[in-house]
Length: 351
Image 1 (cartoon, rainbow, N blue to C red):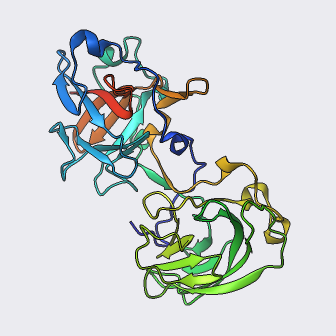
Image 2 (image 1 turned 90 degrees about the horizontal axis):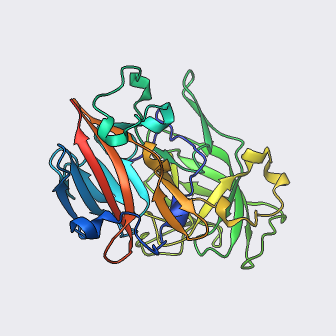
C-alpha cells in the first residue's frame, strides 16, 4: 500500500514483537488440551457457551495466517484478523482493505471481573474514537514535510542511521533535495550520506558524500556500498540493496520486502543533526525495520528467563461492519510439539 503526502504513514516507537519471532516454548501454558483432547493442529471447535475456540498456525515467519471470525475460515479471501509469528493485524487501516477495528478493554479498565464469560455487551462508555485500526510503523516515515496549504513537499531535518542489508555495515543519510515531486512520487532525491565500509565498524565521522535517486519511473533501489541507485532483478532474493523508495515510502531490505536484515533509527530522536552523528549506535535493538502497530501489539508478556511469550491480561472487542466479537488469546504454543506461533483464541459474537 503506497503512501502519498496526503496520507502520511504514522511513526511509532517500534515494539519488541519482531525480536521474538524465533522463540520456541519449553511448555504450553494451556494445560487443558490434554484433558479435553482439544485439536493440536489448525482447527475450530465449539466452546459450549455460544462461542468458539480456534487454533491458528502462524508459525511461518514469512506468511500471514488469515482468519475470518464470521465464517470461522482459515486463509480465505475474506478475513478479519491475521497472524504471523507473534504479530497480529486487522483487516483495516494500513494492514488491509477492510474496515475492521478493535479495542483492548484493558486499556480502558473495562475488563469485567468474570473476564470473557462475563462480557455480554459493548460498554456504553466507549466512543467511536476508541475503536482503533492498524498503523504501519516505519522509522523512516518522517523523511519529508508536506504543507497542506501550499502543497509543497520539502526534506525534513531527519537524519537516519542505518544498518545495511548484510547486517554488518552501517551508514547515515539525510535527504537534502527533492526535485520535481508529484502526486505519486517524489521525483529526484539527493541524499547526503556516510557509509562505513569496514564490517562491524560503527564510525560514521567521515566527510559526507552525496548521490541522486530517480524515483519518477517507479521503485528505486539504493545501495550505500555502491554509492547510489542500483538495478535489482529480484528484490525478494537480492542482498544488493539496502533501501528502496516506492512513492513516498522508503522501505528496508528486511521482512516482507527483502532477505536482508536492514533497519534503522532517526537521530532526530536525540536532536542530532548530520554532523553530530559521528558513529552508529552499538545497541542492536535500535535498528528496527517496519512493523504493524495494532491494538494487538501488546497481547503478550515476555519472560526473560524462559524466553517464552504468554498472553497478557487483555480482552478485545473486534468490529467488522455491524458485527462485534469479544476475543481473547489463550496461548501461543502448540500443546503437542511446544512449537511457537500456534495461537489459541476464543471468541464470540456480541449482541
